[in-house]
Length: 117
Length: 157
Image (cartoon, rainbow over all chains, first blue to last red; front, side):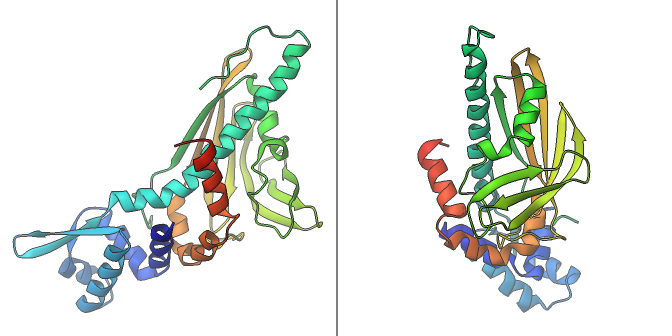
């Protein structure tokens, strides 16, 4: 939970959202990001550090450059929260339908139940 | 334009024991009967969840203290096969006019009493712009935290 909280806090900054957006197209170096953003190279580095610390971005050395890319695991954690909610809600919906199906069954409308998955 | 393109849509699918028409009816008109009771953004427990049955209709919750909170709007109303709602609850656990994600639900009847219900929650990148405030949300027991803890304990992965 803490990780996700930190992630979301990091994403509250519009510049960091833009950086993540750029990186979602593929790995980039600090200099490449600085070229397309209205902020200095050190500022880009600082934002990347924040994104890296919370697990949204990873980096790797390639030759003389350090490339930054989106960390798919980090984003998966973010998304998992909403996914969990829907899993629970849809299971509840399925159960509710079953309950009303049982009522039908008792009235002799059906003689077999298959709760699905 | 997406802020976080890598956040793919959420897909959920369940098979329910009902024809599409009744499944659609229970999902919409009967939402109060199955929606997780703890999952609301109001100041009091849920009295009723309302989806107005038409494109442009509101999706909102009436609370036991008489207040109302909005979740979104109906963008597609095509019973018994398809429903699209907007989900405009932000990261700060409040309704926002400008924050629009979409929940599409399709009801595919496969037998007289058997319907596949497919849910897609998409446009999640919209949360990015609003995400700072979500800290508060996650820190409140009983909001997402409680819901997900219950889910993890009960429903499984």
